[in-house]
Length: 73
Image (cartoon, rainbow, N blue to C red; front, side, top):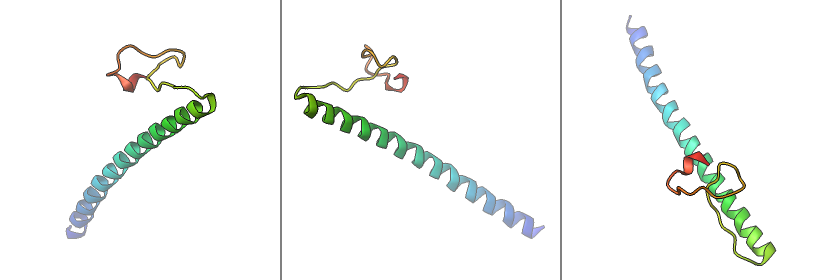
């Protein structure tokens, strides 16, 4: 009975740690995607010798008007 209780406690601790690890990995992925997009925009600006704009887009053809909804594009 005591062994079972200890196992349950350890499983709960492991699950909490795993959830935090998963959240950290998701955040790191999003940060890396943003860095990649910024790097591509910089590279294109240098290559074309002109300014470029990084904006949200759900169609990848034009910028979305509502700049507060970045999760949609």
